[in-house]
Amino acid sequence: MHHLRFDFRSRTTGMLLAFSLCVVAQAHAAADQAAAPSSYMPVTIEVPFDVTERAMALAKFGAMQAHQEFLAERYDLADRPAAGVTMTRGKAVQAGVRARLRPGFTWDMLDALTPEEIRAQDCFPAGFKPLAHPNHAEGGMLFPHFVIEEIARQEQRDLARFDLDFDLPDRFLPEFPAPIFLTTRPDLGDVSQGRVVTLDNYFALFNGILNPKQLEGLRLLLTPFPQQQFNATDDRRSVRPSRGVACFDCHSNGHTDAATHLSGDARPQAFRHRVDTPSLRGLFVQRLFGSQRALKSVEDFTEFEQRGAYFDGDPVIAAKKGVNVLDRGGQVQPMAEMQELFDFPPAPKLNVLGKLDPRKATSSELRGQDLFFGKAQCATCHVPPYYTDNSMHDLQTGRFFAPVMAHGVMTTADGPIKTFPLRGIKDSPPYLHDGRLLTLADTIEFFNLVLETHLSVSEKVDIEAFLCAL
Image (cartoon, rainbow, N blue to C red; front, side):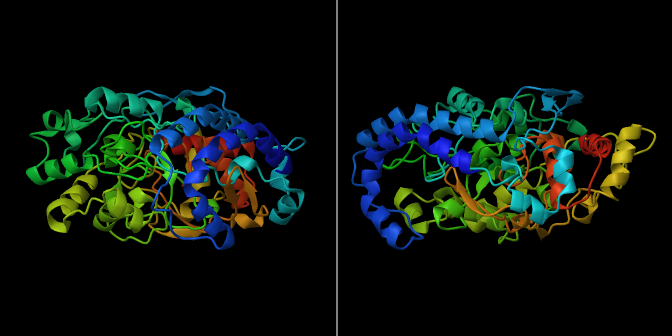
């Protein structure tokens, strides 16, 4: 990691110089934070927008190049699709563990070490530590290019940022557009008709399928409202003043398109977690919401998102940029009801209890199921039929590495994290709350180390086969 830090700094000298023009706008706030970190962002921006935009646009290439080199040092990003395994609409699932090991180590060697030995030798894979935002010092919403292109085509609304691009390759992201399955109409199968649902087409697609309240909820989920980076103020990150973002810009088709930002719950900035947009599928079985799961209903979460999370958890900034205060009965409740309708994709090999039907499953999948409920300890948290326990668990990852600053993020222990449902999991890469695990194989290897289950290579293969059947 020391080598990583040295290389990153040397590669980005030019980028930091270019960014210095923008830093002038926040000089007083930066000075205050150096003395005592603040929970608040600067409200008054003193540098004209065109100066900020030019400086950040010039710095963009260097910033993204440095970040791509950072990712390449953590991961093998090659295109290696898994044989015979696809997402629901046919997109290839990427195969293999992509987190890189320190030179001289193998996964078997790492598995033989205790957490204390791994920490002492500083050999916990960098790709298993918290993942940085492309510009962690600022953060903000970032959308994959295919989302930006589709929203621009349908709505003439621009979700591109002049300072940053989305970072992970398309092959490690969910399929787009995602299919839509409704709990109220399972007979219809995928109701998306292969289209990305927007304000432009939602009524034609869902009139006669949803009731009037649900249609209104869907309309609101598709309606853009001001957000920290996309708004009309002079500290936005879009070239033109923006109408904002919609819930379904990230949760495309009620699923996820892997759009990312930073959670608003922690301070100072380096301790904030990157957020990989979670799927809304199966929200009807979930009871914990928000980055620290402090919200206990879909209604609370829906209201909080546009009051706080859109603005990095800062209500002062929200008031400045145009907070959308939703009416609890007339708007929040219809939006929540609509979110509760998104079902998991079909899993034809599962029985009514959520386990494999032995008449339909392969021998590898059945062995994987036995391991999942046995040696691998997965079912301790991921309970059928939806494979969640609606709880929080602290994996105590701090046993494996010492905290260190890397690429702007403090790589330290995660604390308690939510148990996400595993139904339809192959449709939702990347994995863990910040997307640090690019493949299911990465996820299995991560938990094998963290839970100290000492799985063999063949056992890991069987568990992955089982997960792909969920």
